[in-house]
Image 1 (cartoon, rainbow over the protein chains, first blue to last red):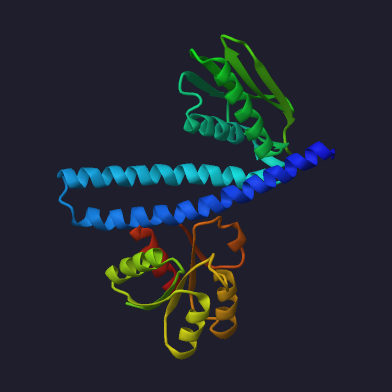
Image 2: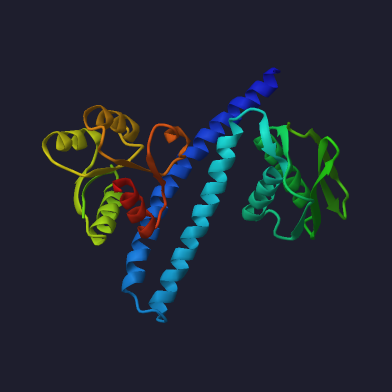
Length: 180
Length: 113
């Protein structure tokens, strides 16, 4: 492992700890908001403005909960080494994070996953990180809009994962061995 | 109806958990940390413990170990805002925050069954 890789690993581990701590605090606060909202919803008359507004608070709380879960899963996996992983799930997580970040607002991301998910020998977090940073870079380059296509295909004993950016045409292609 | 001891260092969270379980018909006592909970357990009678995991001083997992030593049959439900992985193989009942009223009451009833 090079010094630079070690620094990256340490930085990722620190980032993971930071994200896990933030997720813990946000989950506590969201529990308080959602729990109290549930009490208020029980008292509010369905169909009234108050009831509608409380439902909106509840919906927002659930969205925050989902964002925190995605962030927490990503941080947790960042500390893990290479393992058996579903490439499709790792890429879908990167797409989800990119969509939630708002960076891809003007860009359409098309996901094309062929067949059933097949496990590969790879680091889930590194795949997510690689696709997330490539999508981020592509979105930055396509400020006037465009399309990004991510695809996962099984090619014999290999899983091929790719990213194609249009109209610029930058690509990313990974070939990963299928796990036994 | 069961007598449940609720432990959480965050007053807002503790009072919310207490309110949900009281609404479900349980008799609730509460403590702000694991040390106070152990004092309570030494002198009082409860049917179950619901405890936060990350707390100042003794954690929920350390409290679980203490309870298993002295009261091995007492069900303990750990509620956590963090990941549930550290609890795998150590706790029998874990509920990640945030959870709904129904999820909490179902988890308590499941642990008591």
